[in-house]
Image (cartoon, rainbow, N blue to C red):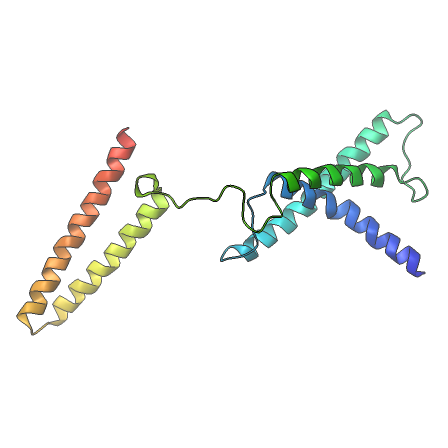
Length: 179
């Protein structure tokens, strides 16, 4: 095989299996970033989504060409109709992705951390688990035996604070559900 045919094969593979889906995914999800704790997960998601979307676009464009082209459709490198259409779709999606801010260092609209009133069930569960761990730790220390009476009083006071905080979290969440 010659170098030219190898380059054609690589270009064809990328154009059919990667590039259109990547450009479309970046246009649809401009807020996805590849840094931070969820960076690796985003890379895997984008790679998978790019592959699946590219295959879907190739099948759809091939079907449309097969159905509506006069005399049928033949895919040849000498007549790259499919590749041209996929490249055009990629270019349009790339422009949309760029306009939506997909390639900026920071998203256009920074996402603000949720306020305590907007916290969901996940955050509530996390807070309740944290309080439960602290309560179990304190109960264990009291059970094992703390000799100092002031330390024992301090631990009992903290246990009461934890119980009140748990009740307050539950009360706030129930009030949110009642609205």
